[in-house]
Image 1 (cartoon, rainbow, N blue to C red):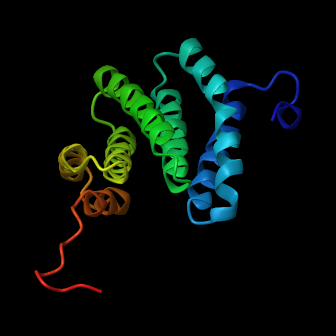
Image 2 (cartoon, rainbow, N blue to C red):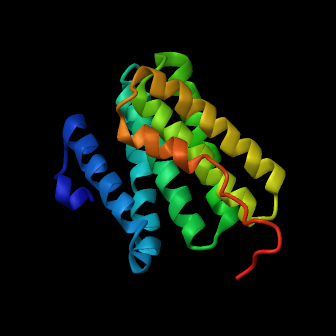
Amino acid sequence: MRSLLGPNPNRDFLFSSCEVRFVRARTALAIPERRASTVADLLELVPILEKLVADYPDFAAYKNGLATVYLRRGELLLLLGQTEPAAAELTKSLAVSRILYDRHGELTETFLVRGQAFVALGKAQAAAGKSDEAAARWKSAAKIFQVALKLDPDNIHLQRGFLDSQPAPKPPAGLTR
């Protein structure tokens, strides 16, 4: 990435470059053959964002970017079947988003990343056979999305997050495939 940014990129250009890679990572969720390389690509962003957070602690977007990197890595690792590393990344996302919430208050972006991290962590725990823990994570996600939707009721991403936080319906008794 350094070669693309030049020897001394300014912070706005650095963060903009990170944002582009966040969007690419979101796309890679749907493209199985790009997932592993995207996990590695996102790892390169961690030190960049950690430095931006350290240098500009009052700028919420940088913390949210760091939480987003951990979230996307966790989602991708989960899709690659790596539940333990996925859970570790998602836990990091939750820790950063908690600091962000405590310091900057109710921001839609924070609620979105935090809620998505709880949904994904629930999926990781369900995949690991921890159904009670998964249900608790999905319940936390639902609460976050409900609060966020009171602040921003027309936000389609929050609406989708709320739906994703709901448990899958169980088939009627005796019905099997």
